[in-house]
Image: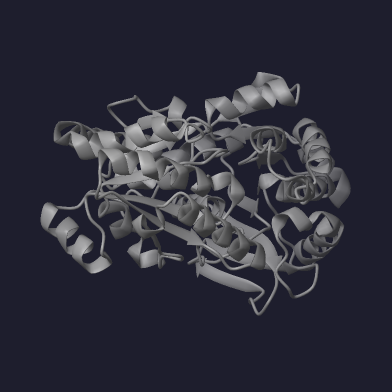
Length: 428
């Protein structure tokens, strides 16, 4: 029987990857949190972990988080930020520079785990060069995203380069040793859209920091509401400014919600840093003005990391209105904090929750339907109580990071040593 793995390379290329990531910056959201939290749990369980990412702007080449965990940054593509959709042409430089760094420092890994297709394409090349098993976590699928963004203007769709992405995903999924999907829905889509055997995919959901995202006593919730200016009639939404997040859809649901709850507000914390992000914010503000709900929306922008949990606890309802969402980490965090949550049907999370017990589910593309679900916990205290207690219990038991890490390591162990004979030949 193979010995347990000891050394891991995790690759996540886009966004601002750091020990304390600046959430809300471009391409810096749920995936960055996912990778870092998983890496921290691997390290806590005794494994040596390197998280490899892109070095740009004034970032250091290395951050050591503890004795078992460090972030290694590999320069490529210049000093400026590059959004993930525009990074296609630089992957060869990353592979070359990463392999040079690995060999210069005599680094050895038992398994490579890549995240998102940009890191997956690159990670596969590195794994083949080093003769190391490669497990890929897609996070999102090009085929699904293209389908769910139907109707978006052609010039915006062109920027995603879907044809190129889907072709590279198709080859990647056949080349890597295994795939980790984050929902059962994603497993189904990979099998159907990419014609891949189901036994090549394992479903392991994302996790949450169960020590940080917790319910709070009523006095603490009251204090958070007073400090943050939030209340029981507020609907809270947080995430990056992106078309797929569906912020325009929840704005369209606001008139119907206000009919049911005249005091209801939408508190929208949409992180925006680029010109494209700011343009989207302008479009959403114009939409709110056109339908007469501008006065019922508060635009929060970026929320500091140390305020995230209280922002989840303070509102009456948390909403995930995405028109496309691979999972929906923010919804799980809100549930873990004891806040009634409404999630989109256009994502995998809704298949895991029990409707009316853990969370509520609706189609944000149907504004009246979504509004009715947002109203329910505000209208009925007994339902709010059930969702608060059962949602938190469900989120914490099912999505605690340590349990997720153990499940992932057990999968990695199955592939250790698969290419040992080839490694020996290369080192001879």
